[in-house]
Image (cartoon, rainbow, N blue to C red; front, side, top):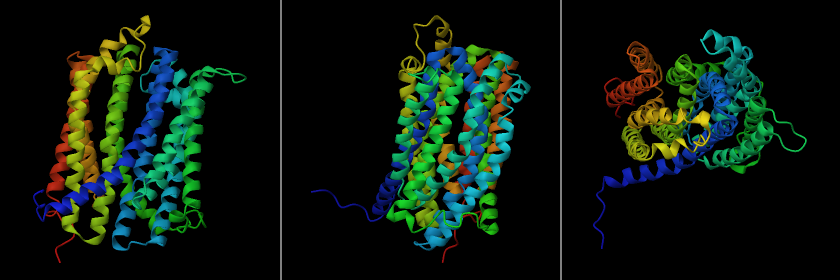
Length: 463
């Protein structure tokens, strides 16, 4: 006969179950999204190291803008969670939030398209090799048209997640992985009457995939009985300036926080470009592997924003505490396990992306392995800062975390990367150590602010 469970253990167990039920499909959705990018890396790696390097700098320029837009539309999640915490059936409030988040997505996409159309001169201005810049622009021009449908899809994903029904986003994402692999393979290498389009084909394929994923998600929310009563697309063009402003007020700091982190890693790609093509290719592989493991704490971060936001809307201080710490512990445990895995088999992981039998790939392999060893060191910090930011977003706290990100990533992280990479001549390894240091500082600052949430008035006052 089992011993009875302590009275205070059941709420924590229930919270762990609720977090896992919400985070599981979100994690798998993120992995599917990442698998789309990983598929492109694998396919372009088959073309050769030069094509892989060109795609790497091109897609990183695109991702810099995608992440900003993603951060902006992520404001929908804490807004909707707070509304549902206050009133479980907030049809009108959720509809307002989804519509105005899509308005915000359109607002940011139009100027980004104009910038990305001129990717080649931008990359040259950033010091990249002219030939690689031309190839990268050939890839980015079709790719950029996937930005708006990607942001619309992410908005609808936040909607179903706020209703704690994330499995629909997972279903669409898995279908997207399959579609992307088939479409991109045909467009990159050619098949039947379709000519081989190389990098340009990869860009077209990815944009088509993002469009299909949005259309699939839109079909679900319009037809499924659980979602259609919200009538998300009815009178879509009706202005709602107060909610539009709220999306920007909360979303802009999230966008800048994510951008500060991601652009640190993108800047690392451009710094690798100053070192050489071999370093770019090695970095592309190492960062892809690190990004795959990051999808789990990212999913937990998205889940904890909803769980903390629901408790925040209810005015439940203990619920806020349980939701935050449950997700945090889950993320740390997973990333510690991933660090051990990377330490144990770095060579096997790298050869998943590059064929070691090709002579042009041989200089890339040991360099990618060395970068991965540093990536293993920052796994726990990466998980901690991601979930820590999600915990604070659930409390509608986004501005101070943005300041922390700017200090940690760009003053500490980039400062160390430049000092070690170029000042001391450590090149790529020095840059990766800088990345690890930036993540470590930000994770500590996020955790410190969460620990002081009651003292600084982020949580509801006791009744």
